[in-house]
Length: 413
Ligand SMILES: [Zn+2]
Image 1: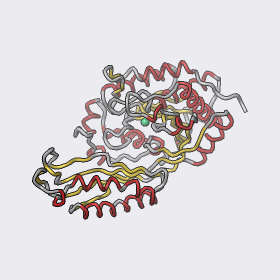
Image 2: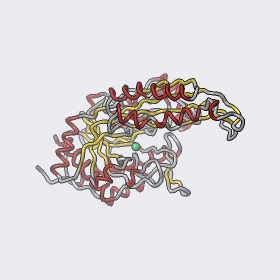
Image 3: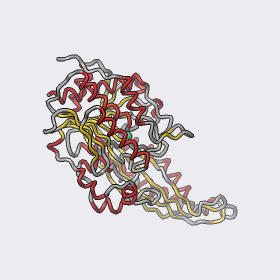
Image 4: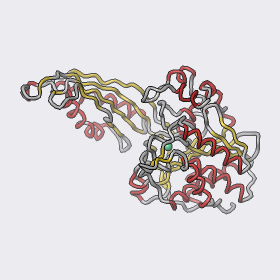
């Protein structure tokens, strides 16, 4: 066995800083590289040029994913990467770290004089954060995007994906050509921040994800009667908000009885009607997001929500409906690749633990195309999607070294 690959930490930092030279929000210290914005497109051009400067064969596909290839020009590749877009006012590490670490992995392999048997490709995916309700870049690579979806997708401000791409001189239908064949990609590896508190709390450097939680989105409504808040006695009300509040109280009990340690149920959006301080709410429209790593548990929890909702409606003299609007099954990442990463972590003396991913990532989409793996590094305070997002530099180096070692091992196999 050869000595492990060591990444150049200063060069990794300069690549990450280079990416974060785009979309910097001086007022908040966050980053705005929302999918298909000017800053998002500019960072893609910069990254492609930076890879070309290092002698990699680079290209940008029809979905605006940027690729760089090292090693044989033919045959299946080991692909490593993540996304370059951010949420509005996002942090410095989400996505950008995985792209920078993949690039550094290739550069450190090259500097170590390694000649890969299989090519290594770096990918910087597009629109992972779901501005248009999906993970366009990786879904296009996996062949999961349809013409109908490209034509109909809109963002929260009602901007059509079609127009957002056209405004950047992109042909939206070209996203269909970004599809890769399964035989072209031997494995996909993504380094990402955990975006949760577990690794920091346990003082463990690396999380190796075996599963990505599924997600069910529900849309609900309690219907009562809007009325005067001063003249209507408390026992004669049909208060839609009171019903919703009572329902929300029952969620921890439902999880305790029918869920698992990985279950998450969130009422994240509520709209009251008429939403006026002096009027009893006549209607409460709300969303519920149910997540778990086991589809059967998700089904049980989603079904289990009906009973407390019905009881709450009856107690408060309300009508109600609660329906599933979208459903994403949990994704099991590749067990053999997970074992490979575990073995490399053991061999290199890297403290690690297996864990599920509560958040969605490109790796879950790529798993439908090729064996995929997800490596986590700790997030300070579990904070992400905010300017306060932070990972200690020593943890980043540990994660980047593990990624580089894994990429090298797979490419030399
Ligand atoms: Zn991300």
